[in-house]
Figure (cartoon, rainbow, N blue to C red):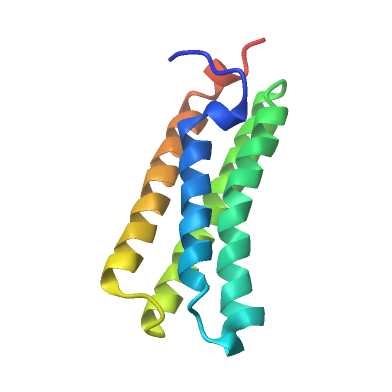
Length: 125
């Protein structure tokens, strides 16, 4: 594993940002009546994935805290999956959009699991 100096260099962080941007762009076409419910929820949960990764990076000094924040990031990506499924069921997403977003979530989840499994490598000082 090559050493990164910042969480912004982590593939998982970069992918999580792509996910939140894609969700923002797609959710702009959601109906106005969803603005304070589904639209806000899906945007918030997708943005929190990256935020939790950033927080985890700041807690690398303490491996258990690092893992806890990565677990929070993983929980947020699962919540995002839920909202993607809801949006799809409401016909706000076409099949391609749904699959693209879920693929981002799947990739982020796999990377987070790998980081959690190898947390000691990130927490070395």
